[in-house]
Length: 338
Image 1 (tube, one colour):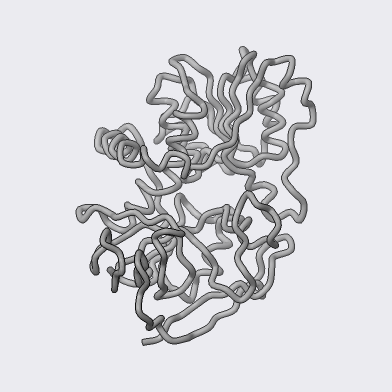
Image 2 (spheres, rainbow, N blue to C red):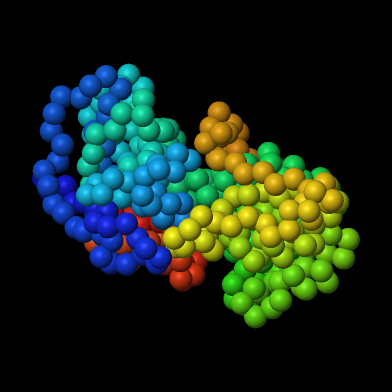
C-alpha cells in the first residue's frame, strides 16, 4: 500500500503559497508497535486557522512548530488499524492530531486521542460537535461567563467557532451582535441564528456601528480576529467588560506577532479583563459539552454550518480557503472512507 503525504516544504512568509507544500508517496509504516502506540488510517482532516501558526519557525513555546520536510499537522478523524494500547482496538474511530498522510503510528501518550461513539458520523464528530464548536462553547461559557441581558459581541460570527459562541450567548438570554464579512453572512446571523444584529465589517465603520448598537457598552466581546476590530470593540466596552481572546486570524499571515490594544489605559480605567484560553484546558468536560450541543441542536436552538470537501490531492488548496473567506462553515476534508 502507498502512503500519500503532504509535507511542509518551506515556511510561509505572508500568505500561504503552493511552494510551501510538497507531495510525497512512501511505504505504510510497518514495525512492531510500542506500548500505547496505534497504527491509524486517517479519514478526515479539519482545516483550522491555528495550523498556520504551526507552520512558523520553532522558538515560540506557546505552540508546536512543524519540522521542515514533515507532514502538515492537523486535527483529524482516524480509524485504528493495529493497536498496542489496551484502550483502543482495531476498528475504533478516534479524534486526534495527525499528519497530512494516509497512515501513521501515533503514541497515545504524546498526542490527544479520543474515541468517537459508534452512532456519530466522522463528519459530525469533527464538525458539529468537534473542536471548533467546543472552542465556541468553552470560550463563551467558561471565559465569557454570560449573564442574562448582557450585551455580547462576537467577531468572525459567521465562522464555525464564532457562530456557536454567539448562539450560546443568545440561548443564555443575552443581546447578541455578530461581526462578519458580507451581507449574506450577516443575513444568516440575524435571520437563521436569530442574533439581534450584525455588522458587515467590509463596508461599515465597525467602531461607529458598535457605538450605535451598544449605547450602554459591550459586556462580553468574543474575539476571533484581533487587529482593528478588536480595537473597535475595546473602545465600546462597558465598565467591567470581559474580552475573550480566542483567535487573531487577521494577523496569522503577518511575519510579526499579533499586536495588542493601542490604548491600555482604556482597559485600566474601564476595569476591563482580557483572557485567552485553549480548548484542551477543558478536556475533562468534553462529554458534557457535546451532550449540551447535541441537545440544543435537536431542539433547534443552535445551527451548524459544515463545509465538507473531498480529495487528498486538494488539501493545500482547500486549506487556503480559510484565509480568503470562501469557506462556508467548519472546513473539513475527507480523504478516505470509513
